[in-house]
Image (cartoon, rainbow, N blue to C red; front, side):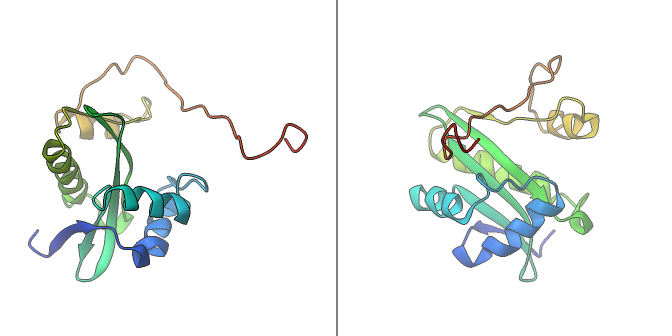
Length: 149
């Protein structure tokens, strides 16, 4: 795919990325906020990168370091009409390249263990794990007082 470019995120990409994440049902108001994108990108410019074809953003991937040896991949998304073209694979390869340059020895992610197509996709790209559990991400909202909740 010669017209595909994988590049670092720019702040003016934000609105287009949000739409891709919403369409993929991966958008979260906290995780996907402009402030979080700005903060993550300011820590390391290649923490967020996009796939672009002919000037159109068609995919996104975030890599978040979790110490010196581990990085977690978040919100890999490709526009529906551009799926099945190798874009997600190229984004994963870029994540691995970045991680290796940083000395990171493991990339991890959270995956819906009920989504066999997704599990097969990652398995074919050498990701492994225990898929016998239906893990869920839990969080506590610290932005509101107990009275507001």
